[in-house]
Length: 437
Image (cartoon, rainbow, N blue to C red; front, side):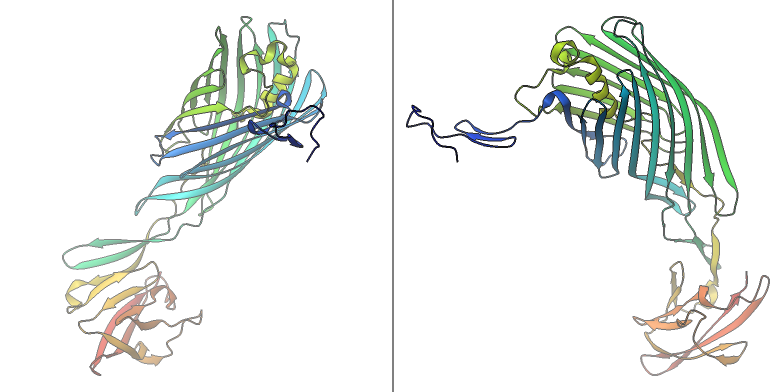
């Protein structure tokens, strides 16, 4: 604690300074070099997801005259994303950038057995070069980018489908496979200043999106991409921002208004082909990190050099080229297959349900044990190649591990009989055919 200065009023309390933390009579404050730092926090509603709030944080910092770093962080129930941005400036008019991204996106996929929500992870990478021009020039910049994104195949459990007729019940297994996508692309762009208070950014490029299916086939989609960005500064610290991008990963459109520290943006992301569009309304506030922070609308006019403002912009803004939705689709080559077919006339009062691996038969009275298992009328061991039982009793029901039985081959069948011990000590015979495939 510092000593009280001579002549200090007796009722005043000494101030405590520890790095950027200041404690005094007026409270606690945290000071930071706001000329080199920018932070924005936002919260809004994602109508496309329909699952409540969506929060985000954007951060940028100038480390020195050559290096700048930043990040974009988004979290909601159906979407989580982290993007890390870095910028190296070997000279005042040349900038080299690198961005790394990761996202997890939950969407509804239309499987054969019905729609289901699946979460897909995706990694992305972008490298770019930017050439700046003099402040008074109508051509503000030239840029070029190369990027890629790759989704990870999710592990989706199989689902059971039931088909019933007056005489037959069929249980089918839907493999529910997801084909992850792999994106590669490049573009070139330019920045124009048609008026002193406006900037227009144009880009043109090419993208290729590939999907690999489980049967060895694939799908490829190539498309020319285009981007348009417009920023207009208005009197009274107002700023209008608009962006439109078309790509193989989905068209995106956003419109926003900024006033001082506050901003509001409406965005629509179409997603890849076959995915539902997602619309978001986000309200944000720029958080000053120090007491002497410059106003955003005056940042380029004396508060700090225009070059520093542009370097902050490059690491503060999420790269538009990186997909904001997961690149994945249902693998329709993974078709459902028959687990079992049952003649309803032969059930004799029993009920049958199924999991992707087993048939579950509830007999008229509870079962307690399996006495004997026979193939083609010959007793055999009740053990599959994986060491687990072929037939067993659980919770009074008879379980038949259909997918563990030996495969007799396509067009062939093995008659199977099971002698089951019931709760009253009586024996019941259950017979069926294990059909090959």
